[in-house]
Length: 461
Ligand code: PHE
Image (cartoon, rainbow, N blue to C red):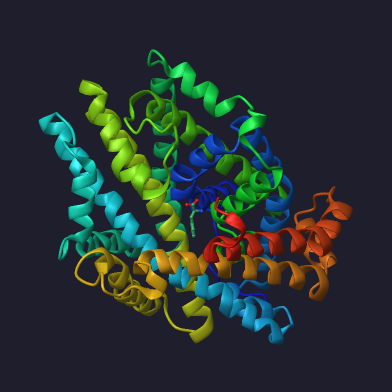
């Protein structure tokens, strides 16, 4: 358990920055604003913040503490803590990033392509004529999506191979402040557009009538929170394993939650008002996911006229940084797992993970073009992997709660939280949450994901 040779972050700030960099990703940008707009604006935001500071906080503390205590990535952490029977959970928690990473990098490749397009647009002026047609032909192209994914993957691998301090930390130190600055600047710019008030009110003012059922608000917020905080993927265990003993786990957890929520709310401030003002859909629905990012928003930027090119470039730089830092965290988790499990060198692990990512990623990259005949359960490969992972994540989260609450016991987690000498003020709360409340809440998310997948009871969030 005491491994002096293990890499470590250079300090508390570096750890928080890295964890926040993982948490702040596509989920914050293309899903949170849509959910908030759909489920009662301010009501959803308040529920989300409340959930993140309770359930999210507890799960974050648990994962980070397991990592720091064991000094291992998730695949060997549970065995190292004296519970080899629970190694299956480590394996499951490793499967999540292993299967998400390849298709996340395909989407990262799409983002990189749009970034390049906007660099060109910024030089020549104008904007996308027809972003939907461009997106359809780009994703169906024989090689372009694969090449874009390969470039995106190469960038993440180049960072990872340099290590925790020299690679990940340095990359975050450049990308995260830039991301934040651009997000604030864009939100301020958007707020100053005449007529933006309508969209801002729509987004921020609580609207109890549009959240028909509090159940849907809660479930939507919970599902979003897991993904957004990068929980149940081994990431926080691995990143926690690099944390110094003198740094505070709970303080870091609160900061990660606040940073992640702040950027999610900010994303809505840049996106919702311009979609309300400029999008032509007319249905009043805020789109989400790839449709929002690669079709609606580019069309909106074109309609903004002269400023559209600069706004588009700033926006896609921001998205690229968010996607890169999240992909870096997933890659690191996979690489650390290979290193810990096979006791191999970092370079070899990077090569293995890189190969896996490109090979499996090609199924998703070609899934809308040359390999579109591969349709597991009738879905394009990318969407199939995404749905499967939406099921596996709550399973891992629930099992982690059971492990921490009933097998390892809360006092071991709390002892890890006390290691830096600080008082732990949330002892009773933690015990009740991790033993009883969290497993039940996580199980309901799993049930709702299953209903969503099989279309039971009209659940669709
Ligand atoms: N948390 C990231 C987001 O909100 C996504 C992510 C998923 C990051 C998986 C790492 C691993 O987009």
